[in-house]
Length: 185
Image (cartoon, rainbow, N blue to C red; front, side, top):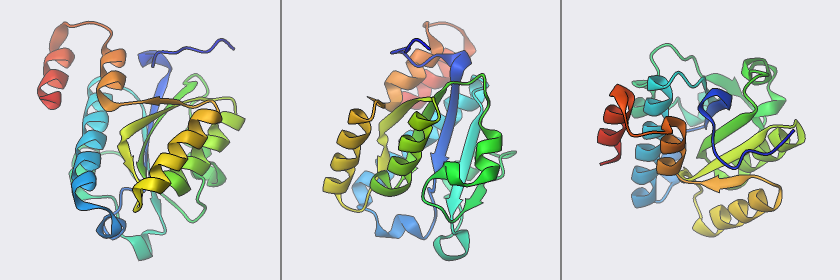
């Protein structure tokens, strides 16, 4: 399968991993706000452009549910509960991955645990993985930096929120472009 260096709208699926209410209390506050904002932009753009989205929650009984800012953008999406760090270890997650969507865009927490292990397993499963660097977070910035380096070495493409949404759009026209441009400002 040829590698696409660009995120393709018709090939993409967005995965938002473990952006949960109790987990966010352990995150650096300034980076957290940016991460939630960027994950929200990805979710909103995905909804506007009909990009399938999967949301996961790691042990919600202990870590809480998905943050309200993101849940409000996902009124029909039911988060998948998991206890495994890699999303692919959860059968419900694997069933929601669509075969014709070969590109997976990752956002969420924590970069060096669930994002990293999911990215590795997705690459092993033959998916092309794009990590939204400004929409992932770890408690320790050094752990996030290490995870990004490891994911890049494993063949993941490290991108950013704006690049992803504008690659999805492809051109500067239409209602989706206008709406997404307002989100970015």
